[in-house]
Length: 175
Image (tube, rainbow, N blue to C red):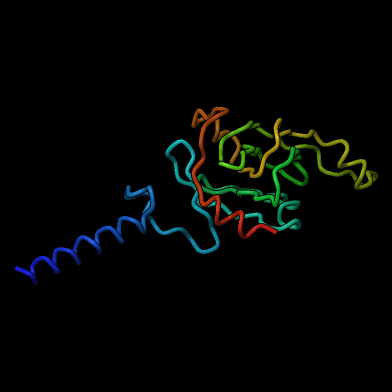
């Protein structure tokens, strides 16, 4: 009987460990492997595999020059502090949706951004930057998520919705 109890204890511990490894999400979609270099982000029950913009250069470049975003693709921007954010469509040729998120991953605002006229040959960098429409977080934000244009509308994303991702892990990696 003692051996059975130990076996049962080991089985229970192994089960707890394997369930704990999945975190709060134990559905088959959540356990699908995340491609290397991508972050799993869940928006209104739909899973995305996003590139992480963790440093100033990557955050500034964003999805500029991208000509296609996969239906489950895009980018999560991680800032080192919470502050008002403004995004522009610099060098972007396709529509992009952007959501600005609080420290806790709550949607503060989201916008359907549209492509702008590219920088003209006779236009300097400052004039180009000043001409671009600015999309605001409205409130201090720590994160932004960009996906293919039209996605947030299809999902019915609303201010106050929670977006699920590895908040602590991404904060720790931002620089």
